[in-house]
Length: 264
Image 1 (cartoon, helix red, strand yellow):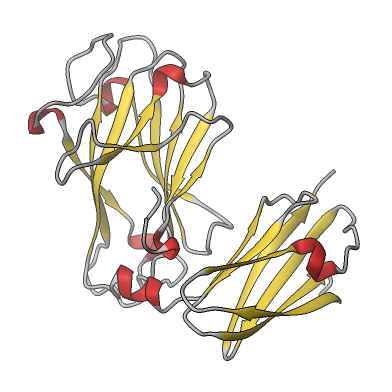
Image 2: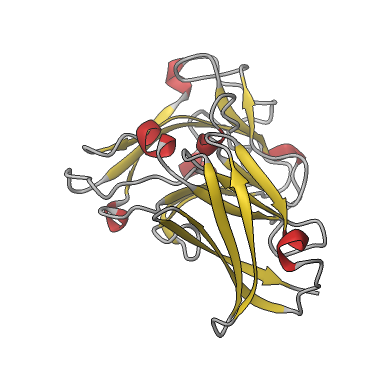
């Protein structure tokens, strides 16, 4: 999930535990690695998501727009893990489920109870997902969500592709300015991260839900690296009351907004 040379292309792992989606060289459909989740080590009903970087499909010309991926999974006959593919066209504010498979419909090999590792191309299956609902959008995210059954089997994903004439993912990432807040909901150590191609000042402004400006700070941004500032530095050390806020980053003509949640 982590791109070693370009942080803007990282996939985000969202999980309630340390055991979740990881890169593995133990099995792959093509190349020399895939992404794996060890379902046998996950607590029942917990959800583990793998979320793509922001993708621009505003120039998609093929209809319907589809995504393909390859999956390998062994069902043990009683613990049916659930895999969903969801898409968002508003940078993760809302999600729409485009595919759900579990148990026998997810399995790519005969039922078994061994620690599954695919060893041949026949143990992988190509899946095609209609994602035409996000065609023409700029702030697209794709999410693989695994709901664990407890004591399930290993699941692998490889070869994720979007089919259509698109703005190149690498090109778009290289020319994007990204604003992130983490952790969110907020803690005392929450940080604001900015990655962009322009070297220069960026203005970070904090607003409450009514649009009233609460604080602002100018940050010197370096191109193509993760620039980080503590939220407390923006607020001047002030503790934010419980509520929903908006963080706005402006760098030149680029303006990005990010919702921020403060909980107890």
